[in-house]
Amino acid sequence: MPLGTNTEESNPCFKEQQLSFQCFDKNNYDKDKCLLQIENYKTCKKFWGELRRYRRRQGLYPLLPPLEERDKIKQEYLSSKNHKH
Image 1 (cartoon, rainbow, N blue to C red):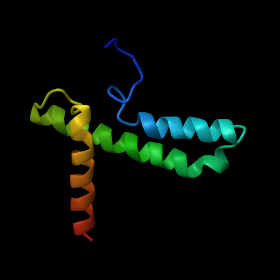
Image 2: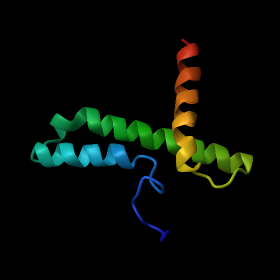
Image 3: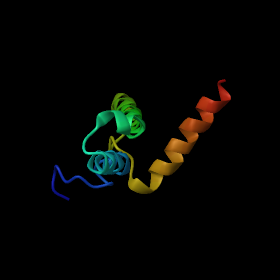
Image 4: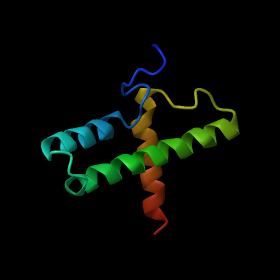
């Protein structure tokens, strides 16, 4: 796959990004009407960025887990986060 290709495989937040773009298109680029989508995208980018940094420190490659493992990783993270409260 060429570098820079924006797909779900290379961009773990592809779906969230697309939802943000769709919201902008639908609402004439009124950012205030798309705050939920924007926040969701930012949260996604933060999560996967932190995971990449963790994997880099641990020497785990590829830095971004394969597509088929990502849902499980997200669920484990959310599960552990919910149990801390």
